[in-house]
Image (cartoon, rainbow, N blue to C red; front, side, top):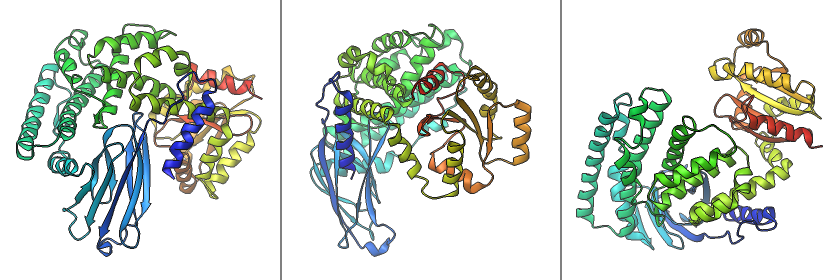
Length: 487
């Protein structure tokens, strides 16, 4: 089924791109087979399936599942761009997989510590597991003092890295692993270190604790930033490097846009120029640049990709970065042109339930209008802080056919009423009267945080939702106006 889903998305993109603004040869993956046998199934009878989770460049996860046969056998076919770590359940947790390989895993539920690999890449996985079983669970950086001055913080991180390097050196001397495992373990150390440093810089600059003089990247962290990206290559990927790229992008945004440059139509080009200069490694540059396109499309916007085809084609050439973004573009383009597809997929999550009935009643009450839904709770400070902006936005659309719906979930009714009165909330007030409805809405709509917002078109189809649809943002204004213009 997952193989079908990937093929469907590729076909979707080819149709959506029409005239071929981007190249059409998107199927750059190779099939990797993960098969095996589980003995003594009766020891853990609750295990009925095996599953693999493949993380891709955008931070998405693709799931592959197979039912365990009566004789304990299973078989999965994955689509991979590059050699990378993947998650495997049960027992194994993670393994390394190469595009085009066939890997066989032998698991005995009576001896779960003794997993055996055969077929392609068997020795590499044996070595990989010897390393991760003794090192992968360690996170010394969690003990760092994020309130320390930059020099002290870096000294701590350096000492942690030194310990981890010593452990890796001992592992190499004992095992003599192949190049793939050497590369993965090296990147593991670099990414762990880099994530700690980037989070430190982001946190302290955001909180204005570090002075402008201390903040300057060409300071205590400059040599590190250059060293960080030297070794990264796409041939073997430690998948947390994708998170590191997102942190690096946030660092560039925070330093170059918030402090030095006004946010206008050329802000992204200005940011890209800094990214291109900041890192020596071509692959890491692509990771960070790709993160900017991904972030924009996560907000259901296509303009950045559509209007910067030349830049994209010139600078994003690595298939494992390039093609997931192109597929994402085509998928979003299709869903924007066919909003009923997204809507019915979401509504299917509810099936027949009180939450579904409640949501239907909201949509039917305001049918024919564009609906802006503000999901909030009485204990959510940011939700309440954003309400004055929501009121202002409602005023600006007062003469338009827009229904502003404030939907309170998981709160005590008396407190809900007092906040409505205190904030003089405009629009329409809805309240999830019981936990079953509230929890059902959160589960069905996948509301994992508050505040959260949703847009519904005149036909009653949910077009998009997310925390990024904040009131009074230009992006939200533009999207409401676009829905109003659509009959």
